[in-house]
Image (spheres, rainbow, N blue to C red):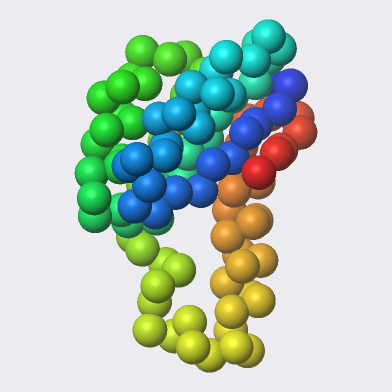
Length: 102
């Protein structure tokens, strides 16, 4: 059965903050949710840390992708809104919940 909602947490090099963030969501009394962390190519060990720490949490999923935000083309302001729209669409496609919160 799909969860009621999906909490989407985008992440890039947030090793210091990501564990407390995820633990805060897991501490909620409402339990019908999933957590989807989308790691944008972290280089500080963020992805490995949360993968190890939360591997047994059935509500937790992590998607690792090549770094897209810091692409050289980001200076092009015409393309930036389209990339943002594609990222939102991708998050929605990956979510299993009936509602999505980011």
